[in-house]
Length: 350
Ligand code: ADE
Ligand code: ZN
Image (tube, rainbow, N blue to C red):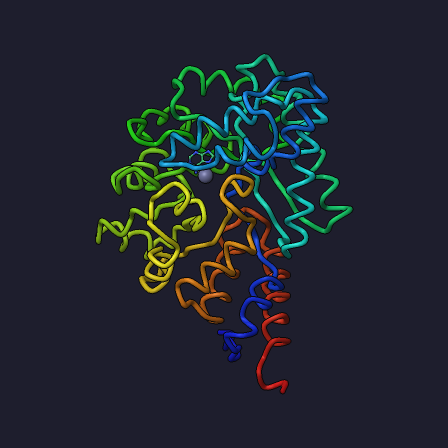
């Protein structure tokens, strides 16, 4: 066991920023900054219901998940060509590299684009090319997870899977996102069973706004390996036991939870409680262009608000590697780099 050296509160933000980490819950369409939305709208001749960047930003006042999703899907309407998807992913990956993200698993929503007549090949090939370039040019290891929109039908999800299968080698898994309430995981039991047969990794959003029961069914009906969000697990003691004993990762997104009013403020966030209960929580940005910050902002502000310290920083970064779908050799290399950074911050150096 690595003994985390003492690090003063004053140096904690620098440590949080510098430590290597993995991001496992980022919707790439949620990384579209207003400036890029307007640049792509101009490039593609798409008209937007907002006069300029400032008025679009002013609309980012959300009251719940659905109020966000309405604007998020409107923002994605500027994406038409393979290069647009590349540019969006590249912009995120450059920011991720600056945050010392060494590994990222990017969610994407093909149905948001195919419904507008965009070929799925343009979506996947553009995103994948950015991931390939990120490895060689930024030193960021990145892969793709295809998400089904849960407000759409099972039939639409199956159709999307069929369209994507010729590009099977360009994504590593599937997820489930969009409007949670009223769309329980059971709706996609057969699609996820098929994805399991195909050897795809499986994850699902559950327990963001929805009840703990959705976390149980994501695990037991969909067979997921990770839960996205999962913060409602605290409502159910037996579920907390299950998540801890099976070491099921939760990809927690503090800024998102506050912006979408799952918690009233960062101080009230239950990240610390999840860690104390022995759950394998990780920190993620979800939709950074909409929620006020990227991964390091989430780490620094959540730690400042909740009083978490260096031992929790180490646990969260190590969890991010353990919970990732990266190979064992790579994971161990990053864990080693993580220890080196912590040692370099040791107060004993003074
Ligand atoms: N799609 C993008 N962000 C999401 C979130 N936080 N929950 C569900 N679906 C999403
Ligand atoms: Zn999400």
